[in-house]
Image (cartoon, rainbow, N blue to C red; front, top):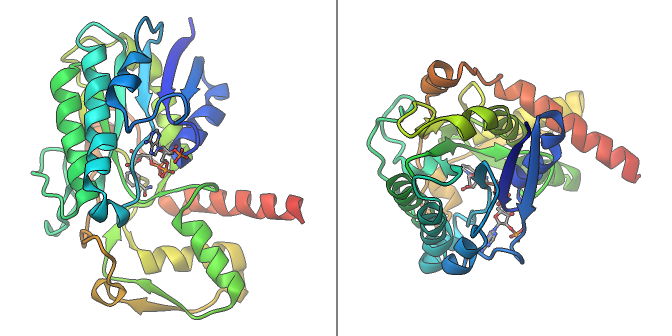
Length: 299
Ligand SMILES: NC(=O)c1ccc[n+]([C@@H]2O[C@H](COP(=O)([O-])OP(=O)(O)OC[C@H]3O[C@@H](n4cnc5c(N)ncnc54)[C@H](OP(=O)(O)O)[C@@H]3O)[C@@H](O)[C@H]2O)c1
């Protein structure tokens, strides 16, 4: 029997991939847009769950504007914590299982090696704090919840680093990218396919099953933003790849403080789900091909 998924968010990187990739899995997926469920209004969103026939609820909507969050802390907290809390409370112990997405930005990046799920979080910015609050309230209210932390999400759509780099290369201007922040890039498609592949198991698992709780998902390999930019250019432009100069985080002076090394360990993912994500460069190559195909068909 198909697993019925109710998904909050339809337009983001992960949301779009979940909706598109669902065709390859035995699921029936329904997405609710911001117009149908605005996360600025926790109670209205929770009401969308009344009488739901879903087996699994996925929160793919979030306040993701890391720098803007510094000046909109209340909205960031409402969208990333209060509304997930209202959803989790509406589901409770007896409703459908819940998947909520969190971030490597719950960590301060000072550990010096990859973060385990058991490491103490210490967010450095408003966005990270709002996501951590979201994790805590979801886990407290819904025992059948999986909080999936991911990092550096990339895809062929939406606002993201890969598209920004290719646009800059197209403009032919000098390119300078931060080289002192390290992390694990993650394909929104790979993350979506992981969630969809586990839908049946999550829907059936009882509270207390190891599939619930916090787990990390990120493509394999650690890189800096500069290293990621260089890979984008190598894959997309080959011998024509522009030179990338190194910038420091301090020089870039973004409003939100970011962790220096927020690399996520994915050993638990392998142990509990038997899944090893592929290397980020392989996932990136697929995204670049997709972007080039879209560009060619638009030309
Ligand atoms: N992007 C990253 O690098 C990254 C890294 C680590 C973790 N994550 C987490 O991964 C998840 C997916 O991220 P993503 O990259 O797919 O995000 P995204 O592309 O920025 O999309 C965010 C989604 O949330 C929706 N949204 C924003 N405010 C809303 C509101 N008030 N009500 C309803 N919907 C709202 C957006 O809808 P509109 O189109 O209407 O704005 C959009 O569908 C998020 O939980 C994020 O925190 C992301």
